[in-house]
Image (cartoon, rainbow, N blue to C red; front, side, top):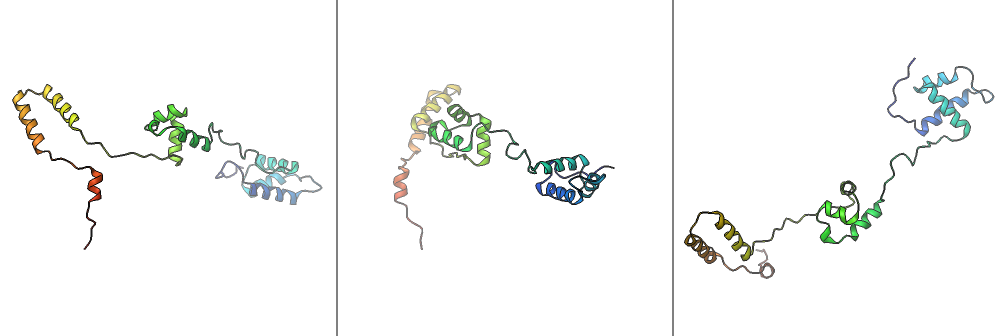
Length: 183
């Protein structure tokens, strides 16, 4: 006779208590009559060896699970330690996970886990700096070195670009003089 499968591997403390109460009710002078363990096993839908283990634990006075509190792998760094290590790193060294890993000594997987748990957050700036005049000239020199153009063509293009570009005010001063929306 086989027992039906359980939904979880471990018995709950309530089930263990119910099994031990049922066995205690059937016990005579502290001993279980023949067939009692099989009877209780079929009633609760568990194996007879499990009922026997529960009864022994009940007789010894320890019904709680011995696994509780020591089931999972111990973490190398606690959450507070991880937060403190990340905060000690200067802002400039927090640009990538690799940089942060090198600065803190934590592995990239530990940092990824902290990111997914919400211990730290990712912030990225979408603001790209505009090209300066020196950058524009450098790009033009690079492009002209790879293009088959005459010097007159490049000079003509540069003169049209410099004439069409209007002076740009500082964004801070432009923001100061904006007209608020209204009626």
